[in-house]
Length: 168
Image 1 (cartoon, rainbow, N blue to C red):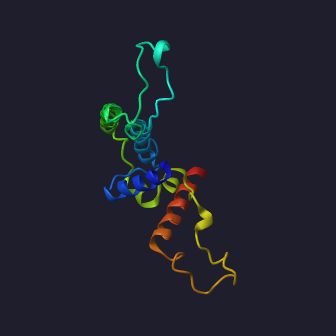
Image 2: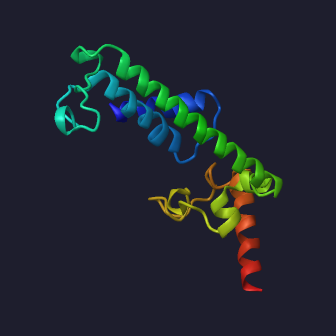
């Protein structure tokens, strides 16, 4: 179930235009909420301390699909809302403070060229750059579209500058 939720969560965030490059919200947030809410649906009453060994001598908890009604589901939903609200509030406060230092956003240049090239001076996946030298027929007279694109030319120029800066 979580695999489907992750894919749907990634699509939802993209549709909402929310940037989550590593997928933390769908994997940990949305799937975590699903796991919490699923207890209110599927709790069968076989697990956990109940009866004379429980601290409050309580009866086993059962979820909606096992005749327990909506009580456990509502409790889990309230808990999820509280944890989500607290986490969001703390994260926003921290990001606000980091933003005051001017280090929250990547520079426009870093966004255009990609952070691997901008910060480290190398491409993240150089093996995926189409090269005339790597073509099965050998070197061609005309460069391919990917080799002559303005973004690749700019990236190569930035890489040269980064290498020259490291050398000197």
